Image (cartoon, rainbow, N blue to C red; front, top):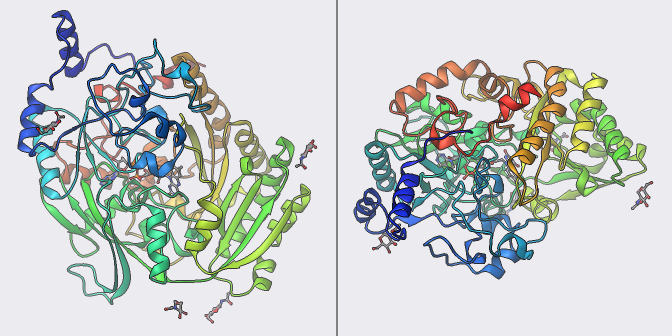
Length: 573
Ligand SMILES: Cc1cc2nc3c(=O)[nH]c(=O)nc-3n(C[C@H](O)[C@H](O)[C@H](O)COP(=O)(O)OP(=O)(O)OC[C@H]3O[C@@H](n4cnc5c(N)ncnc54)[C@H](O)[C@@H]3O)c2cc1C
Ligand SMILES: *[C@@H]1O[C@H](CO)[C@@H](O)[C@H](O)[C@H]1NC(C)=O
Ligand SMILES: *[C@@H]1O[C@H](CO)[C@@H](O)[C@H](O)[C@H]1NC(C)=O
Ligand SMILES: *[C@@H]1O[C@H](CO)[C@@H](O)[C@H](O)[C@H]1NC(C)=O
Ligand SMILES: *[C@@H]1O[C@H](CO)[C@@H](O)[C@H](O)[C@H]1NC(C)=O
């Protein structure tokens, strides 16, 4: 964005530089806020700062060698306030201000030795580690008084940059780790039959939840990443899992939220209380309607899984052919409750099924997978696993999707009716394989028919989708703005034909192009108007705004100054 207005913080800096006074002190508003918070205000220190000969007057408890060694470690990043999983949100893409290592080689001194400087980038200036509703109330009051933007951050996995922001005050929910199983859970104020449920603090991450589910002999339906948070952006944006084709999305399984809304009220929100807000939180997106402190999900009995894994030699031709062959059986697999991932960069694909009780049944149902791998001289293997937690530890945790680098993506939820469009599948497969990292996520809730038709606010087109396919690009640590824009342009060029051949298809808001065309329709379809009225009801002063969230007022706000102005340049391209 070519925004020439400096932020208040930048003004302070300019003034202090003019006076030749080093910027040692924290500006006044912040000092008094810190005092009112009993000294709990913290500076947002960029993750890799200890590796730089420091220019920032900040301190980090981390040490450079550990940062270098664990630069791509999901959980380490989640637990460091100054880190973002996708580092294009840690830097400021427009200005190039950053404090990053060379992700291809974190030991490379060129990235962090002089003349390189550690700059704040997109990391919020200050943060409060949220302990309870009062912290949130205080932050709301501070933001209303000062107009300093608020950001809610949990694990920092957001692909759209909605958990970062230059100059902002962040509310960091990562420390809320409570987790509890109830065998007789009834949402507050409801008269429904009791169910088994897990209540999860806003900061709790998947790998810990799966361990907890194993210890308690239940199934938790969650995503394919160790450190994404179940109660934050994941569930509020939709929340998919390899179990979703059989058991539904996060939004289908969440029973209750506890949330502090912009009026300062700490609400228990479910089907029976503030049901309009419950609808909005089931797909309307994180960061928009309030700060969630915990949420409660249905827990199913532990179930054994039938698993099929395929391996092949991932030449470009093989990957395209494999995707084409897999597309032929995709709808039937999803109807039968199979979910999983095809990852060309790992030369593999894996599907799970909680419905079938025997390998014989599984082999019959998944014959198309065997044939597809055979067609590229690959191999497949069937096995049975004791639980989803075991599946996660065996097949997902050892090779999660790459983080610790810039990562921009375009995705599409491919509708069931599009799978006989050979041209579409060809365009999509080629785009994925030509990009830096592509993947097919067979995670749409296609075989799950027991959903509440009016209860969720995700685009209803999700229900008819089978795959979410995605392509992505990265860039080097020292990329220029022109090079970054070039990557966005390539993304647009390759994905436009896929969009054009799937009119009306949904896009997963949590895994989307920051410039997704007609995003209101793509993310929410017919629900947008209702979501907007709920936003106005619960956050009339827009204390919580984020990029292309419900009620977004556009890119001109200074808080979005790190989003590159790609739209115009690509429209001209
Ligand atoms: C490597 C990787 C793997 C992924 N795998 C999956 C997957 O298998 N399935 C899937 O569905 N998605 C997956 N995602 C996408 C993921 O769901 C989103 O990135 C999601 O936004 C992460 O939520 P978070 O709260 O952990 O992250 P954050 O970046 O911290 O927050 C994301 C958004 O939620 C808001 N938010 C966070 N906490 C709260 C809160 N307590 N109250 C209110 N708003 C809040 C933030 O303001 C922001 O808008 C993956 C992402 C990555 C990078
Ligand atoms: C807030 O006050 C505490 C206690 O005085 C201090 O340790 C901390 O550094 C202050 N935070 C900021 C951001 O200045
Ligand atoms: C775990 O749950 C399964 C499925 O509900 C049940 O068959 C099994 O007996 C349970 N095991 C224990 C140790 O409770
Ligand atoms: C994969 O295919 C390429 C091209 O045919 C070949 O050179 C290579 O040896 C193969 N690799 C494996 C592991 O089979
Ligand atoms: C699997 O077994 C359960 C319990 O015995 C049964 O209810 C179910 O119908 C079986 N599923 C299939 C697909 O055969």
